[in-house]
Length: 246
Image 1 (cartoon, rainbow, N blue to C red):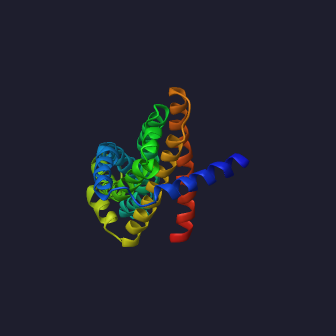
Image 2: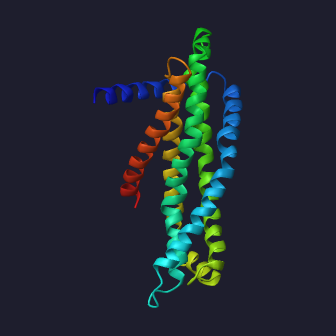
Image 3: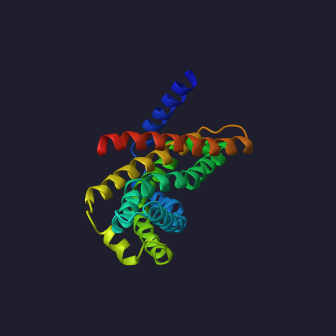
């Protein structure tokens, strides 16, 4: 229990250092662009592939579980849309990115720590926490709404593709379903959640990597802890935000 308070306090102290004024605006901007490419643009492929299959599986499962003559067929598309918008395109994608991006951040910072690169920055008078971590958080928070929108669109497309070979579901019924009773706030809700999730993943992973100690084995442990802890906190905040926003 005391260990939790210790890490929580050290985490917030690290954030205090991270959100101090950047050393140079030009350097910060260059670092942010580089991190956007490394963490955001490089994640588009895996997000699109997973979203396509998620949408297809949702549509197929909805079709098989709603095979009742009383239930309108368009509800299959509607249910698929609501599932993707409310949960899958924000929470599931965030959990996947926690594994990809979170482990990358933790291992990168952990390697810099054990090879004393962070210590060298401190010796030169550079605020290493701000210099290394703030561009990562800024880039990921900035780009994750784009990934979420892509996930929604490709997920719905995946459901449409699956509707061609699914018993009890036609493409026309699916399109009617995804265009019926649309609530724009659901998209806003998903984007708000994704912003919180991006901050959690980037900051928690940076914390574990920044304070990694020892050798290569400790870097691996830091990467594992980053993925596990950020995933747990994402799920916790998913519950809190759902209660607050819906």
